Length: 65
Image 1 (spheres, rainbow, N blue to C red):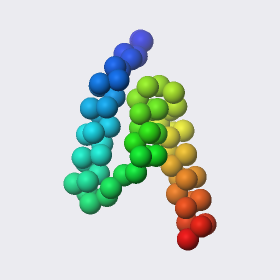
Image 2 (cartoon, helix red, strand yellow; image 1 turned 30 degrees about the vertical axis):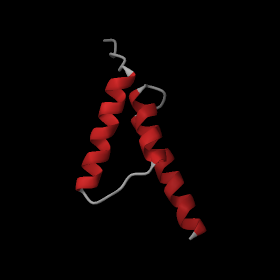
Image 3 (cartoon, rainbow, N blue to C red; image 1 turned 180 degrees about the horizontal axis):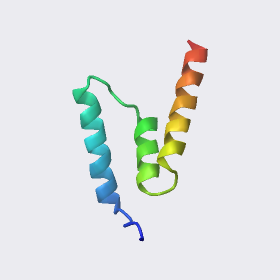
Image 4 (cartoon, rainbow, N blue to C red; image 1 turned 180 degrees about the vertical axis):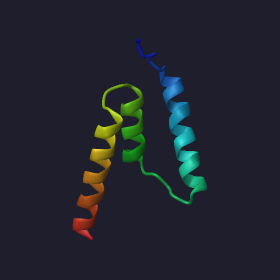
């Protein structure tokens, strides 16, 4: 079964929903996290790859604190 490719407007609407949900949980996602979501929604990376990249980025941030 072929996956439907999302339009740019659909991707941005989805990212806005993700950001709103995070804000309700009192978490403000940064632009890098939103970009990972966009890349995943465009099919450029898998969900697993997005999670791996976010974990790697977070660990790097803790090394610099």
